[in-house]
Image (cartoon, rainbow, N blue to C red; front, side, top):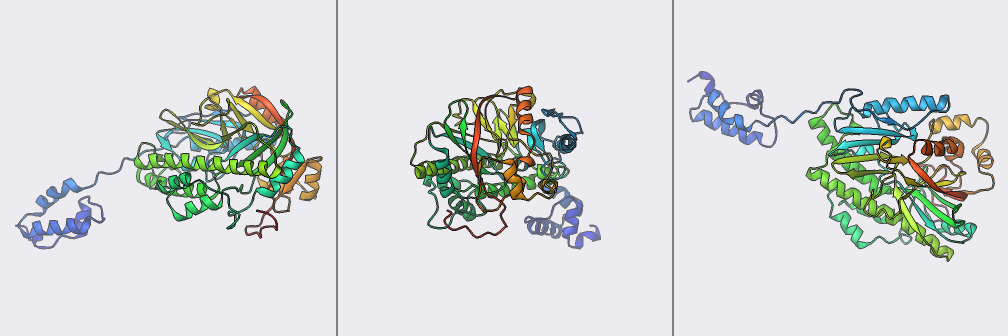
Length: 470
């Protein structure tokens, strides 16, 4: 027998044979040394333990640049739009290298939303058997809901809405919270991505809240009917943000194991895995919560104004939709095909806002193939919020607001104008509407002319809630 057989084997020997350190390592080493003591030579031991060497994970390479093209539904009108479009193209070219991707498109409202390789706002990415949390972003199920309020006085509706809605960080304080159904909370507790104390608590505290940024409560009149209309825009708030974080954690494990060259923001969860099925179910639960959140604000406004509501419908534009084994990720893109969701009771219509001084569009989608079935979600931006502040020049935010929203009732929950949400910070509304029609992305069936709107306003990170606000 070789003299080396009398030297105990070590973890270094096992690693040189291809074994990976882990919980099984101590037992594996003990078995190897027992065989050595019983007279087996090193080659016999190595051969006997070879069946327990883990199979290397499948490595999935990036797709070549240009292998999967994307459709452009955007024609730049000036140098700002040309620069914006080139940035969108650059980031989409990187996105389309993601191994799961089978198609992509950009809308007329497209604009960058992060580092190169991040799906842009106004972007659609189709992936086969894969869900990419980073492609629906943390604001899962950002969406719009519309209620027809008949001949209600819009000024009275604005006053009532201002009393019941809630903008800003965090949720409602104890004693002022809206009710969340027990069935919905049970669904949270029954899903491994949502069954966390902080997530369930956020589901209770954030019901009836709208957040900040470009989220709003809008009151206007329908050109088609003359009726007063209430429209809200917001997403899934804290519960959705927590689901996004949990989803990205799981997706990152798959990425590091199988496709480390894929950008972190484009990590995915295999849709047919246990994790994938659980995450898909979690998305549907968050969707139900978000719809209930919209409903709660609409119903509270109706009750506060002592009026009645007629037709009510909604649609999301930050979400994942499924058509067969293809998962369509819309980041600021409105689905435009029949039955895009199980409760799509919209009669084929969806909602596209433009800016606070322009009408909200009610459209009927065309399932346009060059847009993968989507239409825009709004007006989009040609430059950053910081650049917009610079372009205001010597004008104050208050002066710009008066100039740009003359005759409208515009209110900011925090009491201070958010200049980055002024109409001038967005792409020209008329141009976006024209491109919706020229690219045949949707048919505009109604215009809701603005009376007024409420937004969060310029809020410091930590803000004391104004008196009288819930």
